[in-house]
Image (cartoon, rainbow, N blue to C red; front, side):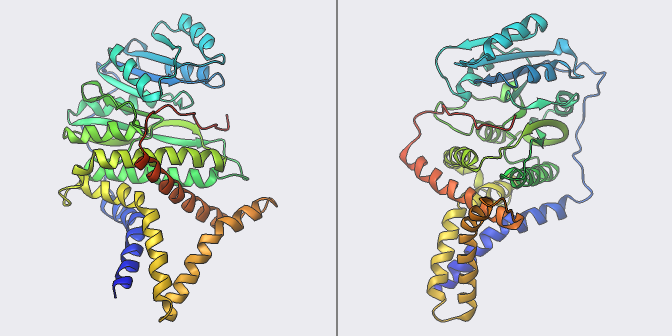
Length: 389
């Protein structure tokens, strides 16, 4: 009996996080929109400080900076603070040249690696805007990106606004289509959480905004700074939402090995944040705790749930054909990534296999990240994932 309870509880956890919770969000948010007081484009808009930490971004940095200053947001209400985190390519010379073109672009060169979070912390101290936009060098703005974020800050309870990341640079031979599908689904879920409770779970780390007075410095050893900043806003009883019309562009990763390394880092940081914000899981009847548990925590414990499910099925299969079939199906799903790898070597791709591979890759990264978390994180300096640009 106990093993049946373990199996069905495990199945329910996976089903709830990946199927039931998104379905509930779609049902509850149907025909609803985010309703807050909004700034109009001819209002006296707040000053914005855009903070960028860059490491060897010579391929994209000029396009990035141009996309900011070509925005429809008033240029006199924008300042850009860019910190080069010990770049050794042409990033520094490119940015220095652009400071002559854009007087509101301020460049800070660091000769010792700081890590993204530490650079942002230092740029925050130098900023003068009422609203901070934290953005990566390889994330390109649309013409309305800034205004579509900032307009929501007319409502005092709005503390953080996320963007809608659009994917570019997809290739057939890698994992970029699966990564795009995953990210697009995440954007939809976050927007629905915004509509229902104002508790969007985790902004897109490549570009989001926050009221300056709500920003708290990220601890030096924390690996997922955007989620930490997001949850600190909720601790202070402010809302966080996704602006579906604030569009930014980023090429998605196509290399499974590079993406796997990135997901391990994120997974390690997820468990740091779980410990830091565990108190927000209570009371369970709040929108914040429900979205935190359903959208994040249940996924983070996914690898342990999969292991428990497999072990319970092995025991149950001795006395039941049903559980024997269930075990066979789970075992087959576990070898799908190997089959996918073999087929990919022959340039043969099965979309369903690739999605299963993506699922198990994420959970393996979570498992490795958990043990890295247990061993302790001494530094948040990491090598950015190579993209397709």
